[in-house]
Image (cartoon, rainbow, N blue to C red):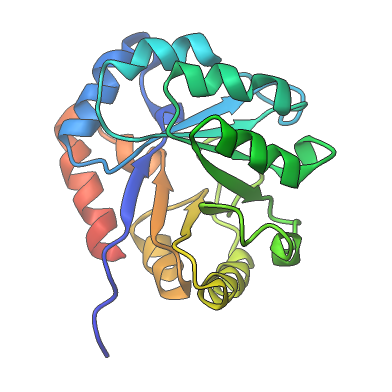
Length: 223
């Protein structure tokens, strides 16, 4: 059996030291992060509040790596331009966060950014039926969004596999990302199911700066 390709690793700064956020982004970049995952929460769509576009803009100078911005906010459309201007490269939203998901994808593309759509654990893969030909990334949430450090929901592996089939059928270059409870064990399961980008918070930042490179290497090797 051929070896699976190594996944891209997108450490979530939700698990970083917020008192040293710029330094943390530089450190995780130097440790081998492929993307920087930025979790934006509003205390409304999800039960937590994190950061806004001003912080994204302030961090933009800390790395040249792609900013993978996951918007867990509603309404989402009024804030797309602000995050695009702040330096987001990929903007991912939840279809439940606005009335017209297709229009939201169009708006992100019009801003010159890559568009991602995120599926909560209870959101079916079928939600993508009329979006798959437009998006650049699909994010399968393997925890309920809102907090870091949660346990992986194993039922999402079937969804990852289903989305992978949809991507292959589309013939398009679409990234399949997984976020939630990703560690060296679940990373392997996700890649085997079809994921090619892994978001890792706790598993990437565990142990402090001296461990970041080893943490990222362990996730890549597990995948």
